[in-house]
Length: 126
Image (tube, rainbow, N blue to C red):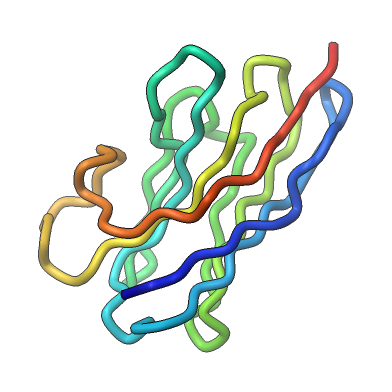
């Protein structure tokens, strides 16, 4: 099993920045893919960004150019730098992981990820 703990959320004004962090523990050697999902009240989970062991990344169109996903495999850490935040970015943000080879193509589909953190709230005021 893999345990994931998010931190770094909070409240920010529109146009501001936040950096989310995720600490992975447990069977971290099984982790191949890591990512971030978010869920706003009344909405389904939305894939935000993901990164593979080889450094490949994928972003949702809604965050391209504003968010950056960074992974430090040596420290079992994942980060999401969020700049130019908008009110529509407000949500619970979840760190997720997937083991090698389950899904060969890097996606932002929730069923493709095995382990989920408990989430960290991000609020953006206009």
